[in-house]
Length: 338
Image (cartoon, rainbow, N blue to C red):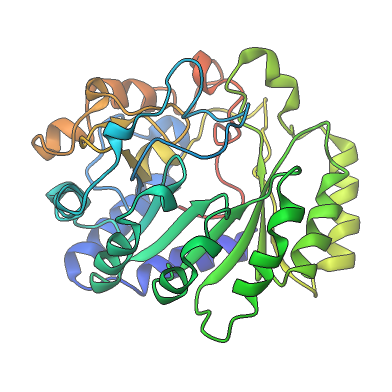
């Protein structure tokens, strides 16, 4: 895990283009190395990463989705156009954000998605896209000609078999120059799916696998989160590392430590932004809302809004807000540094 953290930090560092980015990076690094109780609520650096919702519509309806559900349904009015995208990317707030994630909804439902990728490539950003993979074949030539740095394809139990030939086509394409990652949500009650997913990733020639812990959008689902005291998972992980580590790179999930004080990195390193420039407190507490900040306001009012400072006030404390209680980022990041 320590080596992985060093790698992710270095990936950002080597892409910096000016002294301002470098200084901002080290300010962030120093802040996140502090003991949790000594972290200030107000921070003096800008986000290193940004997740941008290019739409809020999807061709799937997943029960676990925290963005599109009965409480906040998706809308076509939130489809981002290139003018808005340029305005967001060129904002002072994101001038040091080297890693950009394009998300949704299903981002490939936005007709401008390939233009967004071109814009980011011209700015030499590290680009990551989370997609259900169902639209790869529909516009394959554009997809292969405009690849992000990382293509993260979510694994769905009832969809994978119908799409695996599309995944093979992409992963075996000689023009492929992105890192393909099969992403799977793991819960306490589906541990058997871990090895099944590894074998599916090997069969379809993915470069890597990302296992993600479960985020309980509803409180009654909190038992599904993988916690540190899960001995079955611990033993399984050791066995699978011994069996598969030389065959494929596996990024293991962040595990929730209920005893550890609040130490979430996301609320100080990554901005989550919608079509109107509104911020969310984090990538899970969505949709973004003006009360959390808007990137087109003065920077001092954005990254240090009352709402965001209120959330950072949890650092070093065991009692946390209801929304964070069972979030696996609450106890810090295990599989990456920032």
